[in-house]
Structure formats: C-alpha cells, structure tokens
Image 1 (cartoon, rainbow, N blue to C red):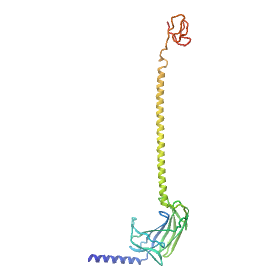
Image 2: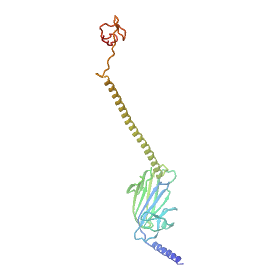
Image 3: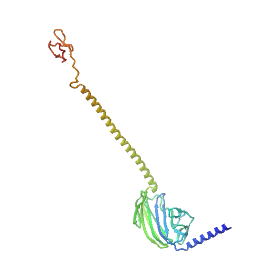
Image 4: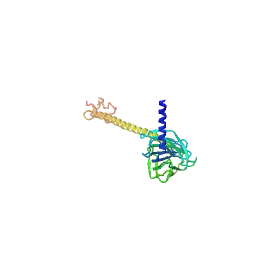
Length: 301
C-alpha cells in the first residue's frame, strides 16, 4: 500500500508541476525553421530547432504551430549532448491554429514533418510557407536548402546569408527578426527543376561517378608508371648490351691491331720454268716477290 500511495503522490506532483508550467508565460528565445524541398523525397522537409527562455520552469507543456494537415510529426526534447528525448504528443486545432502539443523536458526542442506543395509534372516549382507564433519568439529565422540540380533558385524575402553544408548543398538564410504571439511570418520559394531525382539521389550518383573516375584515373596512373619503368630499364638494358658488344668489337680489333697482326699467308713459286703462282696458277717472273694476278706474296727461295 505504501508503494501505491507513493506512486500516486508522485503522479499528482508531476501533474501539478505540468499544470503550473501550462500557466507560465512561455517565451521562445530562438526558433529556426528549415525548409528542404525535394531532399530525400518529392516533398518539403520542415524542421524546427528552438529553445525556450531560461526563466521557463521545466518540464512544461508546450505548443508549437505547424501547417494544417500535419499528421505524423517527429517531436523531441534535445539534451545538451544532442540526444533526442521522444515523448507522446498531440496534434490539435483551435483558434490559434494547428499545433503540436507535448511536454518539454529540456530547453531545446526539435520538430519535423513533411508537406507537399508541388503539382506532378510541373518543373517550375513554387511554394509558400507560413509560421504563426503560439508564443513570442525573440529571434526567428528561416533557412531554405536549394535542391541539387535546380536553377533560378529564389526566396522572398531575399536571403541575407548563404552557406554550403558538408555535402556541398547551398543554403539560404532569411531573417525575420522577432515575433509576437499570434504573429505570422511567411517565406516564398521558387526554382526550376526538371529531374524527379531528389538531392540525396543526385549526390549518391555523383559520388559513384567520382569513385569510378578515381578508379580509372588510378589505373591509368599505374599503367603510365609501369610504362615509364619498363621504358627506363629497357633502354638501360639495351645500352649495357651495346656497351658489351662495343667492348667485344674493340677487343677483337685490338687483337688484330699493329703488332698483334697475324703473319700473312706466303706461297711458294713453282720451280718450273716458266714460273707460275701456286695460288692462282698464273705465270710470274722468276724473281717476283708477289703474284701480279692474285697479289699474294711469295716465300723467298
């Protein structure tokens, strides 16, 4: 019985705390709404990142306005380490518009959902987005991501700052200043895009193409290096072979050079009269030293 009573007391205290929080004058210190058209599907991804002011007692029930027709948002309190705490939520409608109601346990919160403003088969894309503040917002801004492969991308109001994320996608920031409770801020986005591929699909395709190009480039580089090495060692081998042949030739020539020249062949003249050359058989003079026909020298008798 004691445990049951303790649980009931804790439930009552928590309910009282949340009830007190509901009666607080909540102010949102900062709220940035990101619009990512055709990012991972054919719709627009909407993300809210915000935090409540330091004087708000937690936990507290909080209401964040969303577009009419929103049915399945992702809602979370965000810790200082970036972890998301998911709690039950409700989508409600009243005189203040359509909003998501949930218990906020941390000062930071994250909310996201999709909406589809596009007509099928239309390449000139135009959509409007409006946020109606349930609570006062001290610092409010829009951030719009440009779809990969789109042209003539524009926002109204115009962006005051552009940046590129780690994936190489361009983002435009549109400042809207502060908002009073019940005030509405609108942004319009237009661009041309003929391809049905999402930004992620285009990035994945570009990454695969880059990988193939890198692989081909690496293969070509290896082939060129191989050819250079082969050419270098091939020429060196031929050069060494030529040097060896030249050395052998010089050695052969040296063996037959002056002083090492082998004795010339000597032929005897015949003892018959008339004399004749025993090499070619032609007649020669008796006292001739060489044959006048074949030129061979005679052995002295």
